[in-house]
Image 1 (cartoon, rainbow, N blue to C red):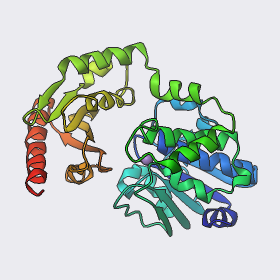
Image 2: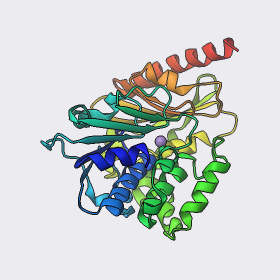
Image 3: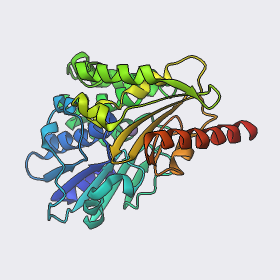
Image 4: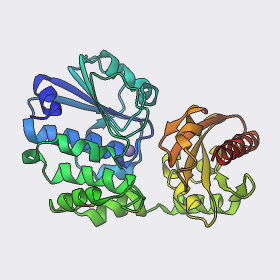
Length: 324
Ligand SMILES: [Mn+2]
């Protein structure tokens, strides 16, 4: 029995938690565990998933409608399972459920994971948390629903099997999963490729405004709160724009800023080279993430933020160039 099964066995009440602004890997690994427990134990366990607000497109996943954003559950859970999250602050207010739980386990692939769980399964060389989690699930109880959730995390965190860290293990796992017979074309079209009409209009504004900063090394664009409101879309509808800003010839880093509060902007960051460890940059600016994909926060009006970010990023790049 795996160390996950042992802990689930002993628990009556279980909560599953993940990082703020949850993505495909976070939601996928959380729901994989949920569907796994349901398949293995039926209704004999009380399992809750608490996550920050996420895009409705994820509702295509089995039992995604069971995910709650409730902060007022009075249950002191026997077991908290944290997925795809490197530190407690990124659990936001949901960290209460972790801190009050009697037992805890974390599955993650973020470097410098410092969540004080009873058991930590952290593997930074893994492409996705779903990949970290997979060997701890008893194959007998992986069904079509579990497989679909795991596949989503694997596909999205690997850039649909395109990023450098994709390897034989990733593809073999994906091959095993698709054999369960879920509709992977529909899954990825719904969650990754399809955009609403207004999302495309927002991309148009961001592309029109796109510029090169930091002496031509960084592509940069942003959207404001008014622009999102006018198109009746939310921050979750624009988090894919960074993908396109990275796919530009001869740039080293891509940056896209969008509002997450009044005068608060989140920067999505992507690097095209492991020479620039963006998690290091992000940690200095209220953020975190991976070497090649990170996020951080700037405060103020967008003009000042743009100037400050360019200054910080240029000195970061020059620092790295000089140290090699
Ligand atoms: Mn991940």
